[in-house]
Length: 473
Ligand code: B12
Ligand code: SF4
Image 1 (cartoon, rainbow, N blue to C red):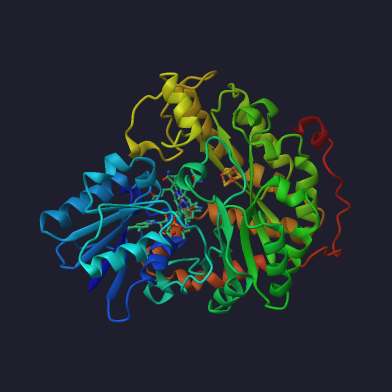
Image 2 (image 1 turned 180 degrees about the horizontal axis):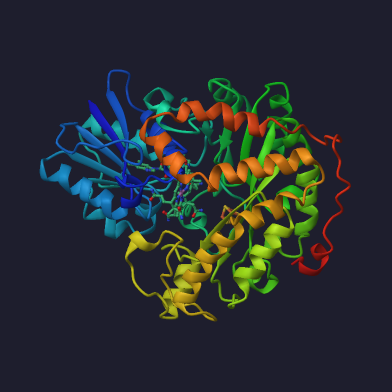
């Protein structure tokens, strides 16, 4: 069987004029995971539209398409085009799981939830000649899953081909997150066997890894065993966790010793009421400043994630958040406009209150206001969001933020990392066009490797900012 696996792209990612680096960061791990269930004599290939052209006039026997909310329109167009020519199409992924009835019009087979059990079940049914229209993931485990088909990934097209996922889901239940809807009807958080995770790491060349797990520190027993074994592997890596994950026990010290150099942390909001509203209880009452100092002491850079426009937010939220993030020395920040994803508790609330502005999924990209905010106008929310980015990445604030660390080493690394990402977009565009991303990897590794844990040299005697206490949530 000839199987084509496609990750469709939203328009911006394929623009002939400008290609933001974020679309060339990570390969489609989900599709490489599904491909591992094909038979040895099946021919498979992956096309990721974010990084390569996609011909629609070829003749595979089966087309497998991964659908996110923002690529849904494009995914349906591709699916329709193959189905018109009688080619069998499977649709799955987060958006299909949230709105299966919408997706059904464009698919021969629909897959709800993770694919590790349902996709091999489908392949088996297909070979027996009686495949079903809809498959719902029921068994949730990563035990015994085959190694993912990294041979199908075009490594040279990505800055971070060594992305890896060793858990699925998250132990928390934030009202705005995709997670509960996607994992409905089964376990919402589960992990690989530690040995399998280590074997997957061993298969990755080079030093740098990026864990795309929602919450790598979410299962303490698993994470602790993993980090213990990773200490001797000489890897440098980046990952995501929560404030709670950083503060509890000493797992974060183990992570840093095992090579953690940068952490994506979901602060989301500085306001306790908004946290309560978003059901982000694991952040409530947590000392953000203590978490930040702990990470800084370990030489771990922070990418802070923030959401604007939740019901507690007023017009002052943008400046307040940026000032706080700069004063705490966050190296990078990712801002989002609150976006009610279909299937989430947040979506249900906003829809029930008649506050949804439209269902044009292309614009559900966390950069557009798609609902009527409570204490802001839609325009003020979008303008404030863009202004927050401009302000956080202004030269002044990059330098100010970099001065908040305790050693010169960390300040210099902060500067190099933030400037590299945000001040050289046209350079990244050129690097992507000329397919020179592999040349940039050693640079990324060398920035990440400049700091060792608790490095005392060049101490500037920097004391924690007094503002820290005043603004802690
Ligand atoms: C890496 C990542 C990206 C990368 C690249 C994506 C890539 N190459 O795969 C980049 C940086 C480009 C990106 C960008 C965006 N992203 Co993104 N991203 C992720 C992230 C962190 C990991 C994805 C991943 O690799 N998961 C691991 C693999 C193993 O799982 P998987 O991809 O889901 O695949 C499994 C199942 O979904 C299923 N499956 C998937 N497709 C199919 C198809 C079939 C037929 C079958 C059987 C099964 C199946 O089987 C797979 C194995 O179980 C997720 C969060 C998350 N934890 O998933 C967010 C996430 C997917 N992104 C999200 C969003 C909103 C965006 C952006 C719009 C955000 C923005 N403001 O920029 C953009 C636009 C993306 C686009 N192209 O449309 C949301 C999606 C919400 C939704 N309802 O669709 C998520 C869930 C983050 C979040 N918490 O809200 N993203
Ligand atoms: S902690 Fe993050 S991944 Fe987990 S439910 Fe909340 S937003 Fe989702």
